[in-house]
Length: 62
Image (cartoon, rainbow, N blue to C red):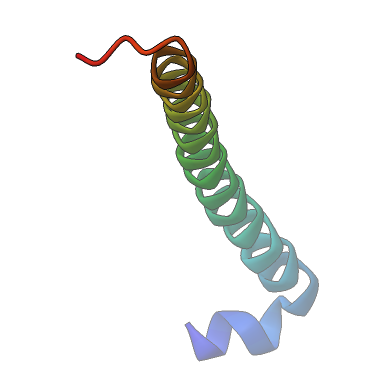
């Protein structure tokens, strides 16, 4: 690998950049999925807390 890197610096640099780009895209996609899941959970909890608050204000327990 080091021989290839020395002989073909430009190709090696392109290879590393391409590999890093693919890995970064995978990580970004994974983080985006995690963020989407967290946002959905936040929406669910917000709706639940709102319902609990409204039920409490109206005197409806359980």
